Image: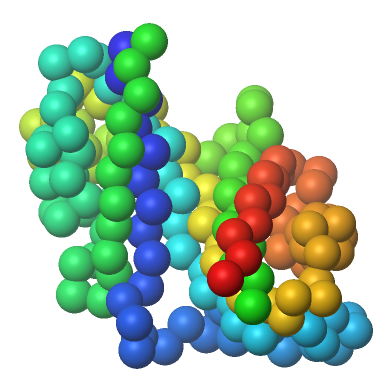
Length: 79
Length: 79
């Protein structure tokens, strides 16, 4: 079994309304030292050993991320 | 400046419809070797040096995660 971890993050310059809302909400709660919040996705994917990192990158390109506005990074752990 | 990275993941046993939809969509695309998909959040938070990891954990408890159904993990990088 392989365990892939995928981080999907908004590209620089892409508006992140959820992150901005969280930043304002944190300030309202008194956490004024926070200067920025960006919210992306953390995807945990389990697969048979035959599945390769290249295939998972392809899955990100085709489905799991939106390559026009998002970057992604794939790491793998085998057990 | 401090950079915090927060991973928010659904607790075990908690239903993850987005992950299940992705799993089915991957199977439809021919990626039948994938056995599970869980989708969580990856939050990148920048803050002044005075902000502590304990405070960021408190932010997770109060706002950034839902501790009833989600776990979270905080890591910090200074520069």
